[in-house]
Image (cartoon, rainbow, N blue to C red; front, side, top):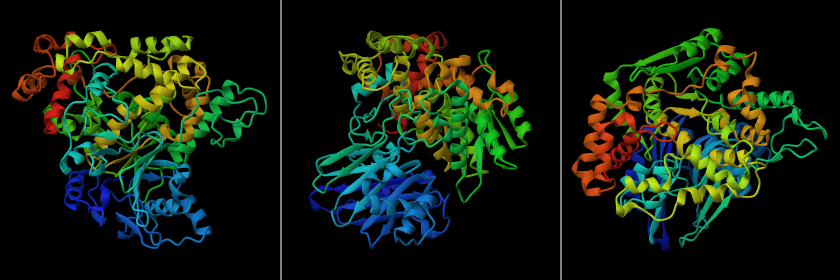
Length: 610
């Protein structure tokens, strides 16, 4: 896990190495163990390194394969790099390191850009071809690793974070009004390729982009699980999940077979994510997902596994920790458990640092929890597994049941009603005229996505949307930004692409059972304590942000009423005054604090100097 950056100039002009150096320096926290720069004519690459695999200098980046005429930078981990290395050795390739970065370069040399089809892992990369002058960018299937891009007529730049691009200079920073519409309605989700800034885009997940020396580009989207039932011969929908239990002949799989299939796939996903040359810990929230990871690691024989939980002081009558459950799991499996209680005095400074660490404005209050947790965890380990993604993959959220049985042509309206923060019409009360747009672009985006071919039911279509869009541009981004702010690599077994493919074919009723994640709960029976499986759904609670008061209220007030906010003129003053007067009385559809949504955006814009 690292930070990468680079530039390609069009028309043969030399790359601006100084700009790439500034972008690379801006990501020092992502890679505290090393820095490197490389340039050749119109292309330059930069890299900050976090040493996880091959701790020697042979694994340093940018990495150059002079014989092949390739140079590359890579962020992430190829969990199957050892298997790929053996295949490539058999093909006659020689290796000078034991790093997965070199495996990526050799795989690119052997299979070309479609080498991504063979990768099992999380990744963002850039490969420069010396002989053709082209640059190729790639991103993993679930968008676990970020890649931001800015371009003009003269050049294209890219980096692992949006603030790094800003550090490179020359970026348009006016507000994208369509992205703002998404932010204010689509639960703060801004789908790829847009960001809140007009001059910056994101490479979409599961995409390989080829940039020619003259600036022309070509995108190839290489993965799209169908969210349909397995065919009658029992083979999985995509043909890539190789689990014996799925070879069920012509009979449909029953609940017991699905339970075994899911457990087998989770077990494989957790095992894959132990590959490292450093110890791997677990972020243990006390919920089902992280507890199952701990249980499976214990089953694999892991001893003295480091686990970490975070808690906050209560506020507004709401508890700020779930230690009762995480302690139960830690005792059951004998982990080396670290219980982190965050004092209120630490919360406000960390909040401001968390906002500065965001590549895009992220409203969820658990950003602060992850930021503080990552700070503590990074003192003990460099790699952790996290339960992120299970709720989207296995239908664990409470907005999924209302979609059960809804006709496909009515899914967009039902989804918007249960998930969107507010209707399109409500924006006129919040945004000033300069930032309003006439079309309901967020509902139309959802409608188009849900209408795409595939997906047997309305719920299947919504799970496809949430897995491919919402998950990528909210919780996954949150975890990456907050953990990498301290050089901590977070691995997410529930986002193993083969597990996601399997879950996509699972009948919706099995996922909705038992209040959500039914098939996963059944898979965990006998491994995880029943008290954890049957508990009410929890989350990373930060009551002081859900119930804004005291210094937190003053921070938001200063951001929304200060000179920068007045000059920007995003929000109507009357609405700002109304929210500031009674911050706890105004909630979005899913219960988020409406004042925090406005305040966070302005805080982020100011933190980035926009």
